[in-house]
Amino acid sequence: MQIVSCPSCGAEVRFKSHAAVMAVCEFCRATLLKDAESVKNLGTMSSVLEDYSPIQIGTCGMLGGRNFTVVGRIQLRYTQGMWNEWYVLYGDGGNGWLGDSSGQFTMSAERKVQETLPAFEKLRIAQPVHINGERFLPAEIRSAKCIAGQGELPFRVGEGWRIRVADLRNGEAFVTLDYTDGEVPVVYSGVAVTLDEMRCQLLRDDDQVKAGAGRFRGKVDALDCPSCGSAIKYLPGITTTLICPACKAQLDASGPQASVLAAGAKMATMNTTIELGATANIRGSEHTVIGAMVRATSGTGAEKWTEYLLFSARGGFFWLIESNAGWFQAKVMHRWPLWDPAAGDTARAENQDYEKSDSYLTTVVAAAGAFNWRVSVGDRVFVTEYENTSGTLAAETTREEMTWSRSTRLAFDQIKTWFNVGPKTVKGIPESEPAPKMAGTLQKFFWWLLGLNFIPLIFNFGETALTLIVAMVFICGMAVSGEDKQ
Ligand SMILES: [Zn+2]
Ligand SMILES: [Zn+2]
Image (cartoon, rainbow, N blue to C red; front, side, top):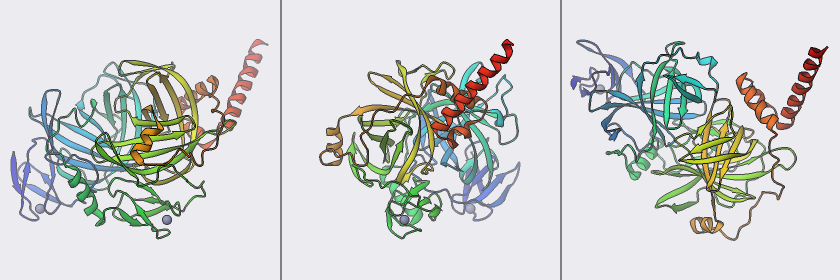
């Protein structure tokens, strides 16, 4: 440990890690750069946005038989949301990063690799990349900006520092390729973990989390819509997007002041069975319904359903889904299933096989409340479902991201008990035939477009247009093969 005095305020600043070159003074937020003999003040760092993470500087835990302590943090922001990278110091002198994004945790450290890795621009969601002989699939590709830092850090960062990263997954294995310094990425590899598995101590408790996040804006749970003035209930610090339930304006709530991103879109009135803001004690912790959205498929036999986003300080996020087929609960999987995008007919998770059952394109037709990523009416997601008797796995793909979630059926009686709602009246969901399964050709075509980086096409056109394109491709293909024969 090295102790220096802050050149700005005189307070003691400790460097626990030998690898740390920078520290942010916890009293005056001066950014201190450690040289051989001296400490330089680089100016003030913005304070971190108080969020709902239970992790804090000083949190310690154990993973794979190694003790670790959290000594620093950078907070990053990209168009869809925010996340934290916590710098950790191991008892054995090693160091690494604890990624913390909406309750999904990963632990990784820098590794050398044998292979030449693709350039940032060449990476595609779900297109395999081999790293030290293991096959990984890109799950997120994004550019982000550092918005704040705290504690000790191993490199010099400042506000506005830009990074380019891709997160790749293979089951529980996790890799970040960091292209910030050029076309040859720095590789961090590790695993997806849960808070419980890290056996953390000195976490913030629920009250500290609530008080901290509230202090950030000085109010705990109400905000006046900057567009229409009506009061919006929400959880400050958790949210990047708010959609005003009254005027449907889309608000950016990730900064100190909420600002209007887009005026209210004309959207279907949301008449939900469970109201926004409703709370329920679920599996021992208080959950709040913070957001709701209606998603739909298009074309003949189009279906509509409602998804409710629930949050609890310790349990994180989960979804309740209300559809013509009944109620379901779904949670984003922190470990990916074993799945081959080229074959794609099966997926395996927690020692169970799932068979492909459906694939479709969905569009958000209405949304209200708070979300932990940027939601807009018109957002398109390509969904592939895999089923077995115990539940359903769903892969959701956009041009920047792929996520897996697992859902199981819930009895309506359970919903009634949790939320004290009356007899089932599924409002705003018209009776309809089940959505047609997406033709195998369309499915293959999707992955083909993905390969050619034509993903924007998928999300800019509807299914009808896609079907037309598929038909055109086939006609062209037949014409070409016809010419070959002559
Ligand atoms: Zn200071
Ligand atoms: Zn409003």
